[in-house]
Image (cartoon, rainbow, N blue to C red; front, side, top):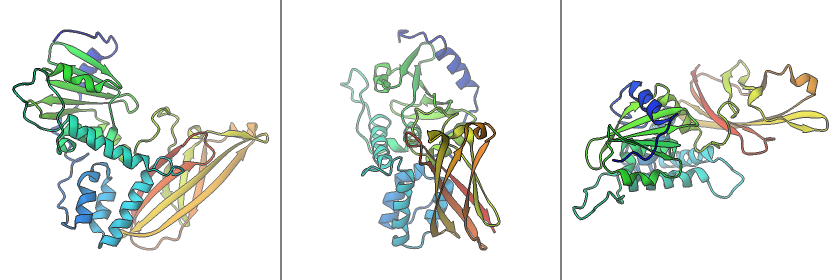
Length: 333
């Protein structure tokens, strides 16, 4: 292959970085699952692909659901919790998921190369979503940068040009870099269409888990500014703490104001118990805001003995754009 890019800051350093990280065989615990799936068609059709973006807690709950009615309710809640903008008629998360599965099947499936082809071309398959590249693509979306190498030459593909990879069909390794997550994944070519992930950043698995919770979150927001929170239980309910640096305050009538709304799906002993919703508005003077380190939202809830999982979504109701974050809290009383 002829050299066509000399990324001073990127390719060489990124390759060194990628080769230094822990080698793993594949997504054994991050994206894959060795679960035995019930034969109920409703269960199987939803779970088959969607488990790739399920958290471990969601898988656990879904496997314990007793009937079709409860599974249907779970499926509705599953997509609702991932909808980035509930103010629109469409669920953009579900549409994006289906688009990513189609892309993975087109570009990452296994197939037999035709002898008449002069260059590698994508082929429609139904198994690309099961591949290592397909799983990462479905969870994290398109990488911001791709580096293809045959061991001697390196070629750089920026965001939006990933489909140009077919020009380099003699490449033996792909390295994907996600700038917004600051993680790298490496895939090695084992055959004409089989690529295996053998490099992953140390923080790669935690990034995958967070992405499953926060599906297609607005990526233009700096990770240091995006909404985040910590939740814990108290004697009277659930306390949510949000760093003030993560809040977009706006000025109203001489005050700096912010609004938060928490929506909590409560599961006890693997069964949906109830939905909680609680909102609060905050207002500070310019003098007061200097001393504010965090905003606290206390959701009253009476806990009884049992095994709990709380699916918590927090949204800024006064933010100029959609600003939300989702996390889980589990405990046993």
